[in-house]
Image (cartoon, rainbow, N blue to C red; front, side, top):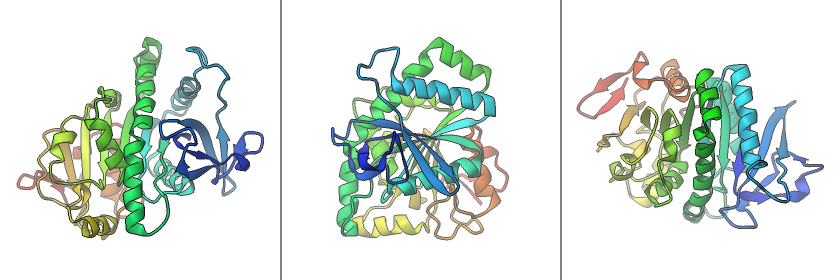
Length: 318
C-alpha cells in the first residue's frame, strides 16, 4: 500500500531506505505539519517492510514522486482489477496501528488502500492527549489539502482519466473517527476547491465530530456519486468522547440527520454490532460487511439487503 504522511521520520529505523512499523513516529514532520513524505508498506512473514520513496534533489514536473507512485498504483489496480480507497484514520493511532487497520481494510473489502497517516497519538493523559490530537488534526489540514490537490490534478490529465475509465477503476474516500474532524476542517477552509469530486463515494465512518450543525459542512462535500454517514448509538469509543466533551457525536446519534447531501446508515440494532467502533473491519454481521464492500468499491449502499429506509429518522436501519 501507499502511505502519505506528515509524521516525523525515524531516520535511524531505515537501512538502505527500508524500515519497519517504527519507520514513522507520533510527532509531526521536522519541517512542519504541511510537509508530507511517501512510503510503500508490505507485510511479509508477519513483519512490516516500509520503504521510503526517494525524493530527487530538484523536483520538476517530470519527476514528482507522488505522480510516479500514482502511476504505479494505477498499473497495479488495472492488472489486479481492484478499486482504491483513500483512508484517513482516527485518534490514538500509532503508525503500526494505522498500517494494521489499512491492511484489514484491504483484506476485508478487496480494495487497494492509499493511507493518509497523521500523528494522532501524542501520548499523555487521555483527555489532554485527545485535545492535543485535535490541534494536530487542524494543523494537518494543509497536508491533506496538498495531497488531494495533487491526486486531483493527476486525474484531470486526459491520459490518466481515460485509462482509469477504460479499466473501470473506482476511487472512494473513507474518513474514520477523529479523521472526520481533520476532514471537516479541510472542507470548511478556503483551501477546499471540490477536490473530493474525484471520489465516487465519500464515507464518513463513525465520525467523531459534533452532530449539531453537521449539515453545514457535509452539504459542501463534492463527490462523484454519494456521501455516506455511518452510525452506531452504542459505539464505546464515541461514548467516551461524548461523555468528556458533552456534545453528541455524529457517529453515535440518530438525531438531527438532516444533511441533504448525505445518506445515513444506522447499524445500531444489527446482530453482533454491539458497542463496535471499528464497524468497517471488525466481525459483526454480513449486512454491515456488504455495505462497506459495496460503497468502498464505488457501489450503492442502499442496494444492500437487510436494511431499509426509515423516513422518520432519515436513515437506513436494520
